[in-house]
Image 1: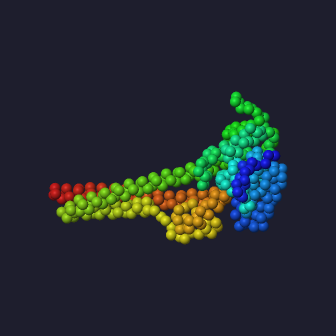
Image 2: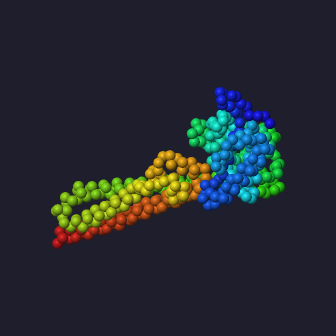
Image 3: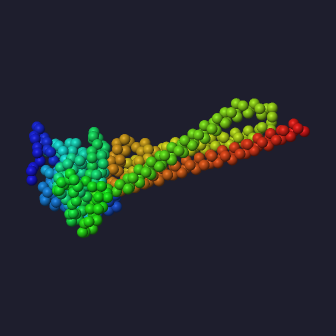
Length: 395
């Protein structure tokens, strides 16, 4: 194996290497439920990693609790090692890992390694789920001329504190026999292939064995959350618009009553009843419309411990606005590193949004019903008044 290219700068060594970042999904929750089992799974994971590193000449640079930072002299070696690790760890005892791989410059000194490449590797693994291997476009470019490797395009993603978006791919990790290759014009044999969903299904159906497939990210889940959030936002905007319409209409009617009709009541006392009905209708409808549009912000003090124990939802601004900034950032980073907890929090956030939206529309329904009934009663009372007034004049 060719060693990583390196140059020495003062006491630092700059390397061009493939960086692998490994993380256990839901480790915090495991620790809360059973510390001994969580520690056993972590140690088992480390044992498997160290075993396969011997085959692919990787080196563990640092352990971060349940995370592991590893470097390789070859992108291909890193990808194959990650695939073998995931295939091994789906066996009992199962360890839910997600892995991110990037290739680039790193700086190595006595304290460890650091650099943009390390940051990118740690960031891209967070896009994965249990059993996934996410690789950057740099890694894909290195392995695309090698056979037996299949990836699914994950699109271009913006990474935190990284200036340029990075194209990501999800490695298809499986123990299937190599499928029969069919090449189109311009495609050469012996290449890694980026496949879409339909082509991937076709390849897997031709395989002779059927095993659990890892690494294909569940886009349906993200689409579901994205659609649900968009629907909530749109419905909330509709509710606010309807509230503003009712507030404007009732405000105009009340202004007309005060400015015009009030002077005529002095000359005709019969107008008191329909005017009072209309005024009460507009006031009640106005109040309910304002209640529907009025912002609601909790003053409850929320701490990082509340977020970690799922007693509070960090995604809702009404909760996190009372948190210290550092605690909020820590809570968000912990949430992003635990996909199971992230989905649970998003589900509770959607439920909370639904509850608020339900209250808005219930208040609006009351406001519109009051306005409708009151307007009918007002018109009827005005007709009765004018009918009585006409009869009185005629007699």
